[in-house]
Length: 562
Image 1: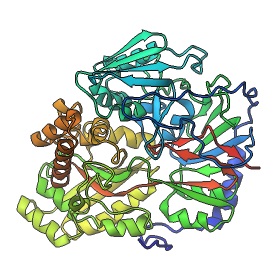
Image 2: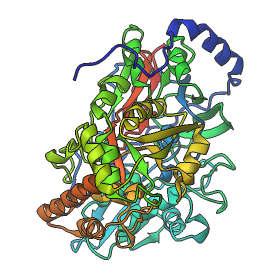
Image 3: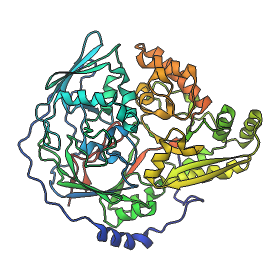
Image 4: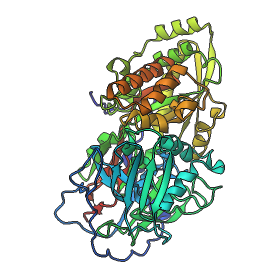
């Protein structure tokens, strides 16, 4: 697809050079004091080779860099838009995911190619009957508060999913849906963990890829924002200044004594999209995440900087539809909204050709839910949209759309949509809030009284069972484990999602999930807009950054060539 270098017609024009000096002065004035470096790494201990039932990786050490000589020490400064809203890694929200692999660990994880690597577990085996999995854990893992990590910690974490105090926390809800296939978690001894299943779970490795080890010592603080979060990862959180930055220092007791290479990472939070790229190009920060698409060519044009495009696990831009509010309870009205959405224009003008237009969440052949005919089933057609409104028996009406400041493209595409909806008698009012307030609205069961909300979803390329068990917005019903909080329900969809999760025959699983896909595109409880690859901007002095299959960045092997 052709890339566009012009500014979108609706987007404000920002001159990079005109604001560079202002940004540098602001960042310098607000910079936190430097912290003392942690002690030098101890002796190396290599991770052991994994033993698995179905997947046997030949190499367990990730080495994303091919640099001949690594330089250790130093501080990496990173910046993204919007303030942190939760340290609970189970929430997997776009505003917070930058710290997940810094602070937390998993039993095992998948790299961008899908290869499995050990982390807190050294090896594992699935029973011959498929009804249990036994994992041997590392003996040398410490939490950041100094406590030893044991199998009982995962037993306690499993208990969080059943805790009444925590059931309203978004992260707990997501992981609860994900872990529905696990019947029990048992600590055989301090370093042996057993998972039991009511029936075989063909996607258990995908489940464990999401299960970060966290502690929730205060059940009234399920988002972990009252104190600094504690994990077992390569970096320890040492300071958080709301709306400004979080500081993370090298964890001296991290089990892999070879890494991290950096002494410290400072992640800054910016509240204006137009300041993100100038921060990078001025040298005020070393890297930026979730770069607005309009700035990609600007970064590439500077020989000292580059971009890293990361499709992750299949990220998409979509719209939450509150079907509790008329007339969105009518399928024909939702379909009219979809046909009135000029996705190709949005992909070209708002996302500069980096994204692709989609009507199905399962746009990639990598997923068994994929059907080519559904990827762009709703071409832009205002006449078709108007006919659907007439079929639904509705006249002119108004809708409200809410978005967050951390996602500047969402407001721009909503403005394009707004102009086209007006042509068929629909008035769209757009409200924008800072991220914390936006998430509060978008994650409430009534959508804060709004009809529509901008949103972003990942995991569309993973096993569909993972997608459906982590996405409440696509919730199928009680039998499936997650109920759609915005009022939509379809019995056949629930049946397909539920059966697909446990079906062992690959062809039958694909059939169930492809039918669920078809129902989603027809019923539109969520309106898909475009694909949404993550874009990071980096100084060329930053080496060793990689992304895992979740699309989250790994920083333990990052080093600075300066």
